[in-house]
Image (cartoon, rainbow, N blue to C red):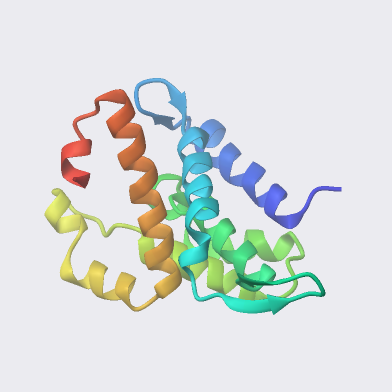
Length: 169
């Protein structure tokens, strides 16, 4: 049986790759980028506020598993509003239909995704307004997801010689 997170990943990949036929770079399916952002979460999760967990062998720092799952889900779905024709309420509804447990969890994922979503605008400056940064900054988990997105884009841009690398330097 697949986990809620696996079902969510499948949904997000389908929404970007099939429903919207979105590409990353010249010819990669957009799910490549979503996978790369998720990988950055795994790489940097230790930067989130961990708590010490003890067992009979050792002490280690970790974040709560449920919180971790919600952050991973937000990272996987971070472009749903911006690029895949979904709304905040659509996201809440989809997660609730997956029997995630409660609407607060669904709202948390949707809120993170909402906070990392660019505003409408004709230029990059319009899309990345002071209001955008103020709302982003107010949600520490959204900041983390946005940094994972930037890290994934930077790595891809550097490896492929994409001109976007200069914007991320």
